Length: 454
Ligand SMILES: *[C@@H]1O[C@H](CO)[C@@H](O)[C@H](O)[C@H]1NC(C)=O
Ligand SMILES: *[C@@H]1O[C@H](CO)[C@@H](O)[C@H](O)[C@H]1NC(C)=O
Ligand SMILES: *[C@@H]1O[C@H](CO)[C@@H](O)[C@H](O)[C@H]1NC(C)=O
Ligand SMILES: *[C@@H]1O[C@H](CO)[C@@H](O)[C@H](O)[C@H]1NC(C)=O
Ligand SMILES: *[C@@H]1O[C@H](CO)[C@@H](O)[C@H](O)[C@H]1NC(C)=O
Image 1 (tube, protein in one colour):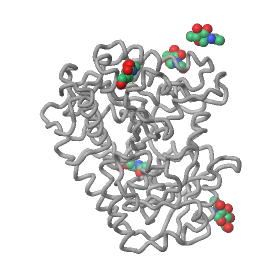
Image 2 (cartoon, rainbow, N blue to C red):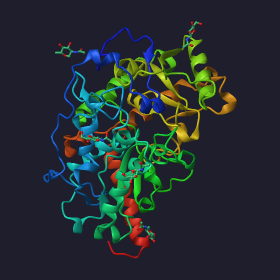
Image 3 (cartoon, protein in one colour):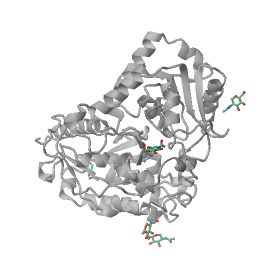
Image 4 (cartoon, helix red, strand yellow):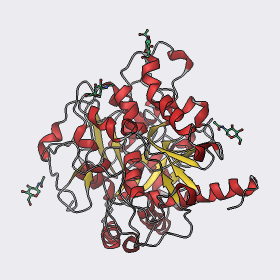
């Protein structure tokens, strides 16, 4: 475990973050004790910073323009980080442009799972394909901190007020001639929470029982590409899955490569592992969680890092990655939602993910995952739920090794590189580059079909 130095043998039983409950209470965090408390925002405001001009723009990425939004739509929301959760000061999780506080080793941060929109922005601002001139842009980036917006207003019981900032944002954007030209088809907006956080159902007219807003229901958003950590797979044509952030934000090719090599060498002493907690009987995911926990707990071939409710886990990165890098397969059952941040932790640890639902990754992250699911993952259907060890142990060693190598090969593109990483240096596309390549394809296709010239 030489990467992360949060050593704490106390955490035999981890305390866990349940996503839904994360909104209700952000818990008291034992692990605060393990690293110094930093001030909320340690990096300065970057909105008007020029891109680094000396580097080459990837020819597969079209020039994009970042709107200069009034501050209340992004950085201004950080002013509320200490009060947005009644029981926990969240500020240090949003520091360092969304990376959170650094661990001791270069490139490693205690990154909170819901900062994808901030990390995307930090990276895009310095991107060599960014243009400061809207008339030479093919794509338009709306740098709204959708995750912070949701967090800050989730306790507001007046729904008009809860939804207001999202409505104002779209009023502001839709007045721009650059928006009106193509009705928003060439616009994109990353959002660092799950789709259901932005889709309050009709059953919650009084605001009770839900902390969601109605952002994704707003008609003005309908043509904009939403990049989101969990899509609504039933009704999310314009939603595209992007990875949850994990702990690694390297600056250079060498940092990535040496981590990948370490994961290749890692001794995988156990067939499988599970990091997570159970769910109460009436919870939709209870059957998956109890099957996984009981089976893992009853064999020596599984490492179980069991998390109790109520307290955050992402603070204990070395326990989490430590369990994953000693195992060949990492179980990824549904929890409060179909997706999990843990999927990306396991990829980072070179541990082959095992899915129990099509909606956990295959129908989410198509921009980021190999086309053939069996190349990098295992799918366990309902009929095999009680035979997990048997299914996994029947996979031939050679095939398992090939899958491990495929997973390790995915690390760069599911990583949010450090905002100050040098493009020429990193040599591979990260989360942001990969999204920009795919968005470029979509916009070019839209323009072709709309008969417009490029
Ligand atoms: C981090 O490094 C500092 C200085 O090298 C050391 O004093 C400290 O104990 C380390 N922290 C952890 C959590 O290992
Ligand atoms: C955010 O912070 C500002 C200034 O501290 C405060 O006036 C405002 O009420 C806060 N908003 C919410 C929704 O808590
Ligand atoms: C809710 O907020 C809106 C906008 O601030 C306000 O006009 C309205 O009166 C509020 N409704 C209630 C019931 O307080
Ligand atoms: C979305 O695009 C369609 C055409 O594809 C257009 O008719 C509609 O007005 C656009 N919506 C907005 C909000 O501009
Ligand atoms: C694992 O099994 C042991 C022994 O049977 C039991 O005491 C423990 O509670 C189990 N742990 C979990 C998380 O189910």
